[in-house]
Image (cartoon, rainbow, N blue to C red):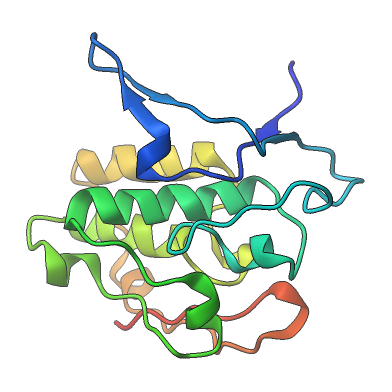
Amino acid sequence: QPQPIIHRDIKPANIKIRTDGRAVLVDFGIAKIYDVHLATTVGAKAVTPGYSPPEQYGGGNTDSRSDIYALGATLFTLLTGQEPPESVLRVVKQAEMPLPSQLNSAISPGVEAAILRSVEIPTDRRFQSVDELRQTLQEAEKGILIAPEAQKRKPAAEDGGGGACGGDHRR
């Protein structure tokens, strides 16, 4: 199995649509092969406001959950037409993550929950793998919604400690 790659710059501008309609991720300029024993933030750093998670600003190590954050932020933009607030502003409570459905009422509760979980500030509250995110989105597409108690859960308090801060979206 090939080693996993952390892209570290997923955003709408880095997704191209092929003539056959398939989306392709481009610009692997700051991508790194993921090694659990190495800090992937060492070396080339780049951030894109609205799409980069707080750990990518130098407050922690990037891993697949960093790309999951950026993918969630990209889905937010594609479905709402607006860029999400910058993650570091959310950390210091200078911005809040709006509910996607307030910007586009056609977004289902399941898709909204997947987006919001993807862009949680603490990495341990995000999807832990892209497969988990994909499965959740597929279930949302089929109309299998997340349990009501999960939709109503309160986000963790933002604490700014150790690169893992609480989420700030409102329910």
